[in-house]
Length: 589
Image (cartoon, rainbow, N blue to C red):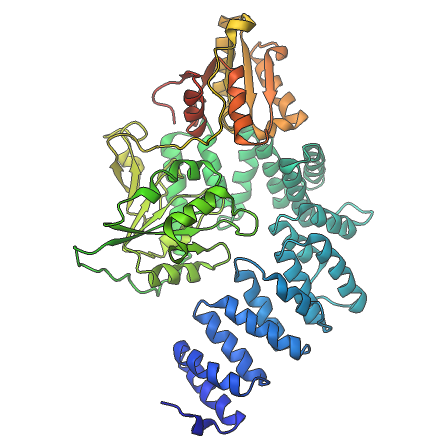
């Protein structure tokens, strides 16, 4: 035991602490630096070491708190500033009180930190002003380029400010291909939010880049993104597949693998091979020196079950999960929820309901944790069974399953296919989604079939009552689909066109967010026209505000149609709940 007598001066205290750091005994470093730093609060070495110890112990917020307090007293402490800059992005949220302290920093590193903190706090206009001041004070600075600033803004969904920065970078010349690629992303994000007219700009920019550089991977990426947002998978996938041939380990590969499920021409074997190849690639890139999970064979104890998802909130997975996860038998199962959502922007009412169901000590904000930090957190929680609710959808944390974070790992609810991950042990399904004797050879996981179906959805309060079929007042049938239009390939359109040909006065209603865009609507009209359907027989709806308004749109539909390539799930439940029958075919994906 180390006593006060052994650090009667600051140098001795620092030497004792650094010896423990060499041993990576972070608990001891924490205990020691807490006392030493309180004795010598002006010590740069002790402040930095204490921050590091807290960070290693997954207490990053405490670490940053100490760092911000220190630079408030010693604003030129660039080492501490760099520590804060490393740790700040790992926090779920930025403490607004820190910003007033960081705003007073005068060094180049300090002003860069302030800009980054403002972006992470979602104060885009203030970040823009602070970045301008940074470049005024340090005109030769190269540590934080405009492109890096724009990329950070894009990552934090500050699209309008990101576009302004990109315009400055481009100047009067046609920008380079990497900049165009980023710019297309920004424009598509703006189009999907509240500026649908920006889609045309994104498409024109991507097409101009493709004309200039037809063999550029940035061109393929940009065109693939544009056609995906146009709900034209037939045109997007050739570009995206070509891009991934060049970059098989690119971060967008999981998303493109998921997108392939929409492809009506993809065979079950092709999709299975695609997933197993991805699962193998991910697994091969993970650390190999990780300890095996410990198994507690006390069969009488409560099982500790963790659920990992970016969708604990207002999302289809949230609607299906809220009536199942919180009602698991607490005498047998202790539930932990690992939420990949952003607490600053996605802590909606349903997210809070999930959180309240398990209490704060079993709720984890994880969206800023690295894979290794999340892996360590799951191990610290002593999880027996870890359940993935995302697969390869946006915001997934599939890597920790590849790292074997828990003794038993399960895929459920959020992904409509085998993950292909070697360490994913089971997949929860039912005999309709995965018919027995058919699906086993197309799944790397052991399929566990629930007897009464795998889906149980909660509908929101305050919905309109189901209405009479609109054909009674219209005098004609209205077919419809509120599915993602990407599910509608040529085979689906051809079949629906044939249906309309059989009932000459019938109409077709399509609703999806991409239909906010005029060019996208006209593209779908042209496909139906190719199969002989008068474009005037199609009606489109885009985004509606609020779920009640969305459900109210079902009163315009007599019969819902199910796409062939990728069946509806949430939309099918919605239609049935609103009294609209759904026409589907068995054996579709």
